[in-house]
Length: 239
Ligand code: UDP
Image (cartoon, rainbow, N blue to C red; front, side, top):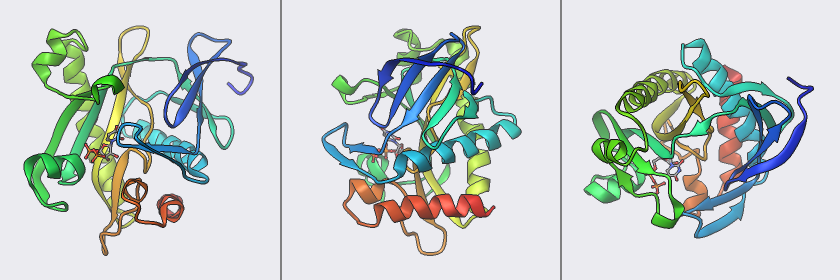
């Protein structure tokens, strides 16, 4: 894999760049330190974030693979670069919540930190111009965003990821409040886990103190942003 040639950039997102390679089966992703929030309204840099998110995502993907979840992860190339399977991303933000926080708390008037009686699943359509609107199952199928079978696979994938991650983070003294994942289609149509799993895309609270160890420190100007990313990464590596 490491002899793959990195070719032209095919996509630049808020936190990552994606490059074509000399094999149509693989891409190389490169993680940046850029941070955005509120659909790009707030911009900043989190020093060292790209390195932590790259390494942390890869550790999470490898652990999920061991637990039977198929992911796009192939091989880490450097501090910021990773080879992934080339997939077509399903344009949905797939969000699982164990505890009320963020937009869910606002939407339903539920205090942040309220434990939910069961994990919840929701979808947003990935579309910056429309502000990533919430979307339901019938809309997803009616609009052809995913088929009924794909939607079923995506839901099973999301709940499985939650089960594995929740248990893992509990073991390092961290509550997994909520997270966002993305799914991709392999050329044969199979749905696999893609994108990243990091403090940019998950809410992590210290199990004892409820201290926030994720991007909310940046979103809400709480300070100690870099330290929070480092703390999560340190705990993951202590396992
Ligand atoms: N999230 C994300 N990208 C987004 C929106 C949300 O990774 O564009 C993650 C976010 O970090 C959190 C979860 O999804 O872990 C739920 O976020 P929420 O809907 O509460 O949105 P927010 O309050 O961040 O606007």
